[in-house]
Image (cartoon, rainbow, N blue to C red; front, side, top):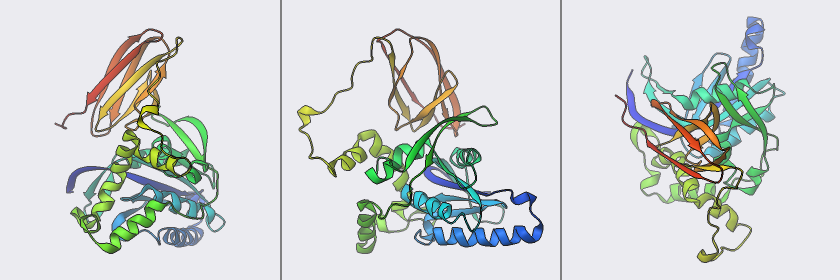
Length: 318
């Protein structure tokens, strides 16, 4: 098995046919054919070079190499066709690695796909759940997208790992955001981003998801979304980070290239985009997880109103 030796941040849609294994073989065949038709319809607008589909037997896992919007619209399309085949769905934005399987076909491994499966396992029949990392990116792309989500709280998987999940309760938005039109114009006019990169994927697709996270860190995505409804404020009027309240402390985070943040065993999000959070005074154990490298753990003692900073760069895998 040959690896691309590169970790990418991608959106992963995991789908499961409800009670598939309990059906007679003849009914399984009918369900799988209907499922394949629904998924094919959902992926019509996504170029083949921008996606990788893994058949899981009772469902599928689809990795989107480009815009997270592709995963959102594909998931909504399949969910809205649930009358044809009963499914549950989960979407995650996280790190994956491209590899070739024993047949020389492109495959995907990594924490990004594992978490997508965990998120899907929490869903009820016909329900679409997304992870916190996917929500934080997509909800900032458009006001219409923000209204699609409802926080469902924390769920614990069989490995005693907690996940913050959001359900998609709205219908499919009538239009995609302006950035989609801009990307189509760029592809039509040509240029470096319109060309093909390693493994045959568009260069724009290979950088889209990591760029989304970088834009969140810099505030670019949020700023663009706000400009749709209000004029830009002068630089002098920008809000500065407020000091923590007298009853809490603030934890500032600087993690490279990325890491899931757990405080006292509870997941608080992925950094980036997460840069700071409030914690209660007292002793805490902060763990940073990255699927490629060993976890980093720090024990801290904080006082009310104090600010504590944790910086960590995950090193090269030995």
